[in-house]
Image (tube, rainbow, N blue to C red; front, side, top):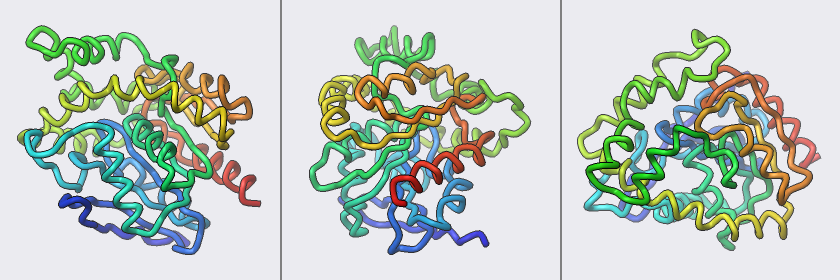
Amino acid sequence: MVLPTHHRTATVDAQQVFYREAGPEEAATVLLLHGFPSSSHMFRHLIPALADRYHVIATDHVGYGQSSMPQAGEFTYTFDHLAAITAGLLEKLGVSRFSVYVHDYGAPIGWRLALNPAFEVTAIISQSGNAYMEGFAKPFWDDLFSYATSPGPDTEPGARAKFSAETTRWQYENGAEDPSLVSPDNWLHDQTLLDRPGNDQVQLALFRDYPTNIGGYPQLHEYFRASQVPLLAVWGERDEIFGPDGAHAFSHDLPDAEVHLLPAGHFALETHLDAISGYIHGFLGRLTG
């Protein structure tokens, strides 16, 4: 039986935060945090695959999906702020203990939650959710780092190319063994949201803020070493945004990290849902007994 997914909205700091929720509320919670340029839509199939055993919550970050998208001049688009909004949602839902699944932009948000003493992160699942300098794939990141370091008319065109329709489609299809398994609804959905008036400034603001995530890596690595939090990396080995070196890097500080590379790209859930959900069930099942 496929359990239903509820589509809900909560007000957090005057913003409407959309989230998907499924599974028994009394079960252990799994928080799903999406990456750029997607939304919780990327978890639409994973949610029911996990909800038979877990209480699953998947949020849309402010500026993405069905959540509020205030203009960049009206909201401070930083990863600190997005993490604070997510923390506010969890507090409103009464969730303080959870495992977290991070992808792309969801990783720096998830890392901030893990470092927040208000929460207990019991396990981490990373799908192309980077935490080390290893994994930043060239040439994808060259333009972004150039813009973040020196934003201006010379570097902005390269940054803007990252939210073009061509790049959005490439992020989904690149690395897929069989691109026909990837529904075009994905990139059309994402691009429609990226093309909203003012969303370009949202993306540029977060590109400029991205170096703060790297600046937080030493503290994050110390957290890994001190906590030895259980970690599962399920990663597309053909991902040309966050390469597979980023998956192996977790073992620097978490020697028991479980790493599985899949013959997939950045959005591995689109082609390897069964494999990923199977790894998650096995990983979390071994932790909970």
